[in-house]
Amino acid sequence: MWESLVKMQNKRFLLTIIIMLTSFSALAQVTDYHAHAITDFYRDLVAKHNMLLDEGFPLPQWSKESHLSLMKEAGITTSILTLPAPHPYFGDKQECAEVCRQLNEELYELTKITNGNEQTSDTTFRFCATLPLPDVDAAIAEAVYALDTLGAVGVKLATNVYGQYLGDSVLDPLMKFLSDRHALVILHPHKPAPINNAVMAQTPLAMQEYLSETTRAVCNMISRNVLARYPDMRIVVPHAGAYLPIAIPRMKSLYPVMKMNGLVGDINFDRNITCLYFDLAGSPFEATIEALLTITTQDHLLYGSDYPYVSPQDIKNNMPRMRKYLDSTPQNSKQNQVSENKQMFGNHIVRIAEIRVYKKYLSDYLKAASRVGKESVEKEKGVVCIFPMQVKNEPNTIRIVEIYKDSAAYQSHLHTPHFLEYKQSTLHMVKSLRLIDTEPLAPGMMPLIFQKY
Image 1 (cartoon, rainbow, N blue to C red):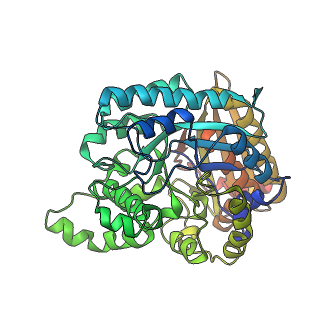
Image 2: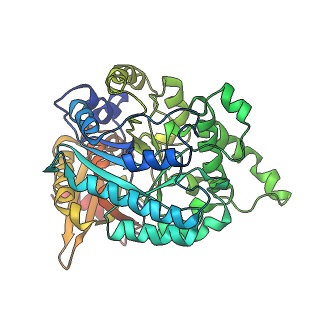
Image 3: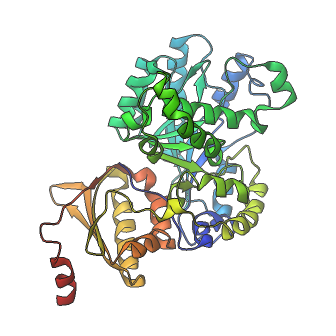
């Protein structure tokens, strides 16, 4: 499955990805994994069905020009656009399929042309497709079209579509398809169904229920072992993981008695959590990030602006605050674990990664992989080798041999700014990742090799 995305050497290095938004001259490529496009067609569609206030607040204004302006000012290289709430299903499955097709084709057009000019590496739009759920067959068909024909980098899934929650067994065929495709899946909370309207009127969805929705949907998937059974998706959880840092430990503690009483089946918590990544939309506070790091590692944190629901000025103003909080964020034991996919020859760690890259991103990926390999070996004493190779007869397949002096050197590497930049900027370029486990035939040779050279 995919590698990690964003670790750091000390607390401030996470900001080599995030705080680039504070200046015009960004030193790293920043990809925004939580950004929305609200086209005229979508707004008119929602208005037609009297759903403009379905989520409890109006849709903000959006245009490609204003979005690109923010990106340029903030130093965002790529924004992955998704559709906001509400989901475009209004009771007619055929209409939903047709609407999703038009919406996806609109977003595809945005990825091609920007302000009348071909996009450059300075500011680009990519998109995750909207699927016509609750019709699972139609959703799979649209995902095939969006991924293969339109070049979508993944799909967006609502936490629920009018009561059809993620984790529902009826969605298993879609989950299998997305896993087989090693798909990037961006989640977003939607209005719960059913809902107590009086409660929503008192406390708007965005203030609290969105966090509950996100937690509910992810926990539903974990409780059915969905993410362990279909492990090759990369799930981006919004808003710094919502309440998952509280919910997951509770689920783990109650799991034995629940399973003993036949209330749940087998759950591989660690395998479920492995495919979860977390965007930091909502400008989480120090305590939020510290809590999140008890269930994940900093390499699974992603930048998210939540534009246009957050104003450009607020996006830029929030960065110094995030810098302060992240500077003081402690390391935790979760970050000091060495993956089971890394074999130690003596004290050395050796790993092989096989990465398949989408053809249209191949040139950019080769540059990024070559750069991070060179910088790592040059700058880090504990990095013995990071050697990317392109398979001759399969040019979209890259194999990387990595050798680290010891576990501490490996952990230090994962925290460096050049590694963080590489992971953040290439997530959407990679079609699949396979970490190859190896067993040394003569472990004692490794020290001899290094002594010789």
